[in-house]
Structure formats: C-alpha cells, structure tokens
Length: 271
Image (cartoon, helix red, strand yellow):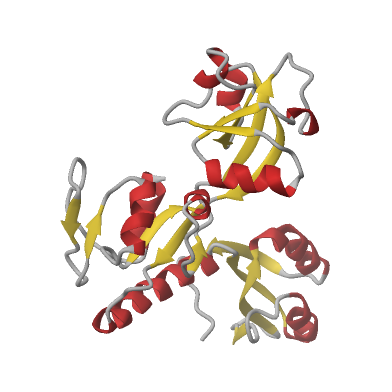
C-alpha cells in the first residue's frame, strides 16, 4: 500500500525529499508533514488526533470499530476471507464449534454471529496460515488479493467477510486552524479519483451531425466545439466514462467522425 500511497501524494502536487527509512518528513510546497507508519497505527493516530489525515485499509478501520469520514482510494483491493485446507470437505456451516485463527477477531466474530455459526476465535499475530500447520485451528480468516498465498499453503476460500481497499480517513479531532488545509488536500484527492473514471475525447465531424454528437458525448455540461478551416467541419472535445470508450467510438464512427483521439485526464472537478 505504501508505493501507491506515495504516488497519490505526488499526484496531488506535494513535493518532498527522499523518505526511505524515515518516520516523518516535511512537505516542501505545502504546510504539512508526512508520517510513515503501520496501517493499524494510522487508525490509532487518527483516533487520538495525532495526525489529521491518514491512508489505511478499510479492513483495519472495521476491525478497530473506527467511525471516520472516509474516501475510497481505488487501490489496495483485497478480500477478507474464510479459508480451509484445500483437501478438506469443510463448508461455512460445517465450521460450527470449530477453531478459527485470525488477526481480525472482531470482524470474524461479527461475521459468524451474523450467520448463526458458533466458533472459537483464536487471535494470532503474524502468519495466520501457521495456525493450521500446527493444528491450532481448523480454518483461518485472512486477507487475500490474488489467492496466491492461499494456494501456496494448500488453502481454499469458502466465504468472504468484507471487500477492502485503501481509504483516506480524517481525524475527528482536527483543529479549526487546520481544517482549510485538510479540505484542500481532500479536494485534490477527489479530483484525482474522479479523473480516473473519465477520458478526454477529441474528433472532427461535419457540423450537420452536431445534434447526434451532443447525444453521444454530452460531457459534464456540453461538448466544446470549434470551427475548422475545412468547409462545414468542426473539432469536438468532450469527456467520456472509461468503461464506455469503445462503445462511444463505435457510435462516433457510425456518424462519420474522423481522427478520434482519447487521452487520460489528470484532474477533474465538477464545481
């Protein structure tokens, strides 16, 4: 989670010197300091007002019963799953009365209680898979993103507790004189996240087809249209949702649009 977090911080325009092996560092072009710590420590520091904004995992916040304003950051995607030995016949319901090893005892307890399954939760610190190897538990609850670690340990998932990802959280104890600065950083992050959903699109087309163009690429308000030197032709610029790119291109070709070009957007605001 560290590398994409640093990348996001740079994307919102914050400049800082080499940070490796340092716990905190000043920002060169903004009145703020960056602190580097474990994701669980982030939540505690946010709770206690030691730091104002923090990046951590949704799973960590849920385990700590945290109640903070949060923004999903669209990276660090992972699932918290129940896993059992791959050669076992165990299913979720058959874990009744069994021992479950995890570093997420609160989430695990709530999950099984919600399913009406009584289990004994064994809290572990470190590699959860080891609890199965030494017969300390019959199943585990752990995070997985690709499933590679589970497969490497001959485990298979049989249920998902939560879907997690990196989130930005805000301390409830932010001082009034810092609120404007925090709001500025949040606005920058939100503009980056919004931009990730869209593409800029440029093309040339006959002025006669503008009514069709406005239906296909309306943009946030309306497309930008500029007259070309070629008789009856205009240049159009708009924005489209990334997942709709190929369908939009197909529709534009059907109305004889030419020179269709799409480009990523760095930042995007709607107000």
